Image (tube, rainbow, N blue to C red; front, side, top):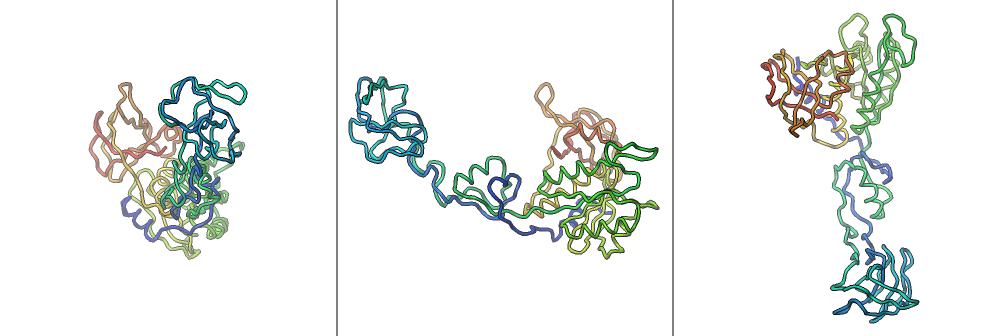
Length: 397
């Protein structure tokens, strides 16, 4: 049986970006830049007032008692159109273009005005309150490197640089479908033996957070023809994610139908707990990652395998970043598979980082997972873990 690392190597082999597309700056959050972004405009494009006040020519010993004549006004978007001379002032507002000849803005709190004359009421030791042109960036400056994942501050940055759009990697289109006669929609009146179809909600949310574009194709019955129909639809996507039907029961048809459709199986078991039945193959040009039906198994294997695959499809090379924290409780010796325990990482009352494994690690349970924000990694045959021992953990939120 393959280790997690061996399975990941097979899964990621040959995976890469899916192409580029132009993305409006208002839609770039979460997108991965496929090209560096350079400014098309100097920002600010002119000398701008940093304060409301009066633009003047600064003189030595300027201060209380100096009087100047107000010759006009410079509001944002409405510049004063001639130079300022000695003894003159222009009323100016924050963001306004500083007139030629001015090198200082006297803030309005330091001025008394009477008609078209102002009297300065406080010392003005040196020129101030003017933002130079290009203090933020200049035309042609690099704003963001290739591979940057855009966050909420990038749209304003790019827009300020006069960029209506940027070039990003195309988001992978992911087709998800559930499988099982027992699965019913939330709100259904359940009969004995039926359960709510719930896994795809969190899986879709996770894939969206990872940069994918999830599309739920519905729930296929335990019937080869129904499964084949959904898999055929999935061939139009970059990644197909069947949920359930991955084990070896008499009604687990997904892998057999996948093979019947000409799918190439690349692996079908991994030495991981939870999630041993996870499998991977190719169906036409679409990658397929089959997840177990148990909720914790599906979510853990999605984190371990689909997250890194989407990363690679988006042009990012990084995979996992494991950290370490001390246990607050003991752990039983581990079995032969690499294990991932749902856990809560936090700061204790002393402000020290600690990690606490969930009390029940059953792979069918959702509540312990919802109360967790990390996965503790335990190597095969790891000895008993004791409180205070440092363990590897993977942040998941």
